Length: 245
Image (cartoon, rainbow, N blue to C red; front, top):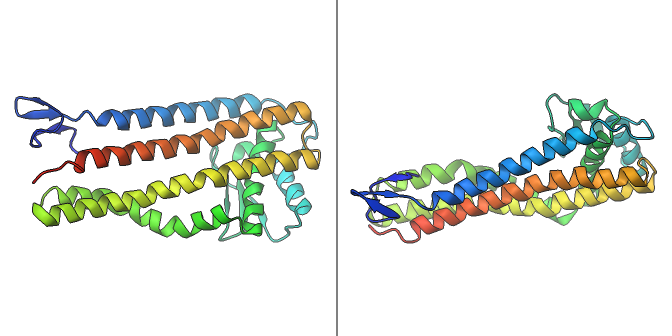
């Protein structure tokens, strides 16, 4: 999308050019994501310094939770990086990062429990997770094609232009839908982690409060991503919903 350029009277004109005021939506979305990212990093760093009273590492926590849930066909694996933890349902593997796998901090235990929450969701065929999994190929295709279709559409006129731009916006909508369906999946995984950590006594009552802060900060990154995507979609609708050939 061109932010400053000639475009038939959009935005604030100046000497035949315009200032695309809708770009502020992108800036707001970026600011929200940056703030959420900074918060989760600082929160994780803070509670990474507090050792859990049981002394269990993230990997040991995951193993204990999965045994408690009666799930015996999921591997616990170590992956490099920071906050790269995830559950891969295709390989049935819980992948824990450097700061989680072998660490016994409250933050490590909390993150490991959250990923196990996803395992339990998969095991129980949790509906939002099933929906998100089904959306993955469509969302990936949508995020890949959206901008090329819109940009190519700018080089055409009439119905061809309208068709390509609308197709691009529709493709981007699928990516936004994926972000939205991710929210209940992530919040539910955190809730499951919170409950199960108390049930099996891995964290005490004070550590439980810390867990809520760690998982709450992590959840906000998904909220921020969804908000940024919605703002970007709104920008596209504002720009091209009033486009005239």
